[in-house]
Length: 375
Image (cartoon, rainbow, N blue to C red; front, side, top):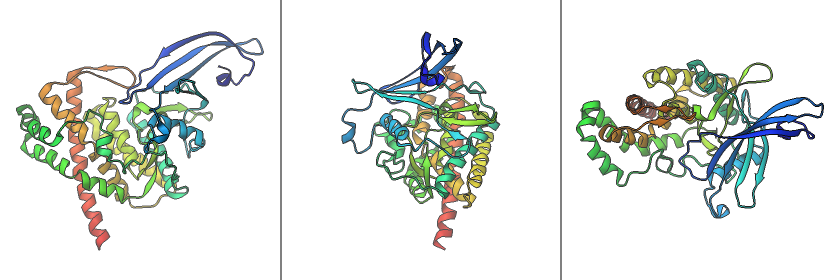
């Protein structure tokens, strides 16, 4: 309370606790808001609030070759790496990081208030993409990413499988081939699209190889709407504030905004009927941010990184196919809104089209780039 108010002598009057929605495939996380009233040295009353994220790291984290992601976020804050980010991109203010005797870590953070109440218009996605471009561009031009061992090595640990957003499917290829033969799938997609889905699975190593050859920068790696806030800065201008830095690490140019587009659509937090509009706004915003940061590379390389990173989301596509056969379930957005099952299915089918279209684009760009490189 005193750290939030900047007063070492403020006296607590009231407080209340509110658990916040936190969507994660990882266990050992809890999120809450503490708010209340205090009396300042002047006798005046002041309201205060803060968000606390409680992280229970994996056991024997020091022995892990890949650090627990919750502990990675703590290390990122403690390293100073996130203290001053470029442009109008920043983290929430960190009031305190407390190590409890039971091994849990309490991360006390600024309580952020989004000016759009978490329902962003398209232009705000473009603005956030621009800020992400400045962030990525800074590390491309001025300050190469650190080689800290705890950073998330995004492409070096079989990302497409280990970071699946649904449960991994046993014998996934055989299972998916059976699913592709189901009549609801054939009826929805047709034989040509079914063939494209099969090709997407075959081409996963190719997409990974293309991404590994692109310029590398420092990435948040989970910059969907769920983890971004549009906040009014001291000068009255909007800032993009990113939370949940558990996946921070090196990554190829363009990959950052794949999550902004695809991750937002996957959670039904933007109408997938307008997916192409979101795609264009995000990409052009990101490119303008890269240019502002001084990066002058080819636009095609940025587009390749973006489209190839989207093409890695084959597990989401697998989930969509199973929804067509088994039925969809309601989805809760990052802000706790429940999206009905029928709406989820419509949105996800549209998302599948975007995924396949971007994969086709990545193949074309990759083939063109490989030809020009060989020449």
